Amino acid sequence: MHEDLWDIVDSNAHDGDKAKGAVAIDAFPGLGKTTSVLAFAKQFHLREIAEHGDRTPEGHQRLPVCRVGLTGNTGLKDFNRAMLEFFAHPGNIRGTAAQFASRALDCMISCHVRLLIVDDLHFLRWRNTSGVEISNHFKYIANEYPVTLVFVGVGLAERGLLDEVDALGNPVLAQSGRRTTPLGMEPFLIDTQERRRQWRGVLLAIEQRLVLADARRGMLADELPDYLFARSTGHIGSLMTLINRGCQRAVRTGAERLDREVLDRVKNDAAAENARRELAAALDRRRITSRVTPGRSRSVAGAP
Ligand SMILES: Nc1ncnc2c1ncn2[C@@H]1O[C@H](COP(=O)(O)OP(=O)(O)OP(=O)(O)O)[C@@H](O)[C@H]1O
Ligand SMILES: [Mg+2]
Image 1 (cartoon, rainbow, N blue to C red):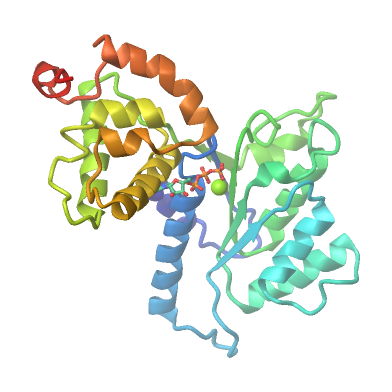
Image 2: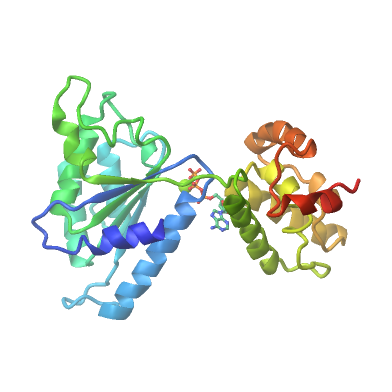
């Protein structure tokens, strides 16, 4: 995803009078959209500051990235206000939606913003099901603001962000749909050798960062790959919650390592717990496995 983002963001560095391509990161909750985009934003911010300095030629603070988080049921006016809040602009109390938008534009130009991240875009109120109003607003931003838009959200495609025609058959939506590149994120899967290797890689990476007195190499990747997959169903959010709480418990109880016994006592989020039962049954019956070399799994995980 970062590779694609670099391609799109860096190729958008042309003059202000052309509408710039946008990105929509559209994936299921808890797969690490926000984490991943913020990691990219940080790299981008640091690169821009290192290259151009932390002040613009006019002496303003340089802010290469503006991130706007939406609250539930946000309208377009609140969205514009949220952009002003990012800049701590004093004029965010009174004004029309258009005035807010033009103040935000002024801030973005002054601070040389190049990336505008809108997190949880699906919170935005889609007044008519086709979302023409929203599409038009983002077209305006893409036209006028010198930024690359990065939308992050759940089910953006279904809400019509990437459509070409609205409910009445007018092709107005294509102004946004044609300029927005969708990027997805998938949960971890274990159906091919390559994917099992990825899963193992993640567990090895986590393992190395655990600070527990009795931690050993292979504690997660060799001993618990099936178990952790069943409990997290391959979702990074659920996996990290489990590991986090497990470590906390391991420290508190003095176990100082992660094993089935410790993790079995840790409660995970509701969705992961629901999906777990079916998956655990299949893994137990060896119908599927998350191990890289399935032949080896019997001797290790087959032990009671
Ligand atoms: N690359 C990663 N390394 C470690 N932990 C991660 C990583 N990506 C995500 N996580 C963990 O997963 C959790 C969920 O990630 P995040 O909030 O980014 O998901 P999201 O896709 O934005 O979810 P939502 O749609 O609910 O906003 C985070 O709290 C974090 O602990
Ligand atoms: Mg998020």
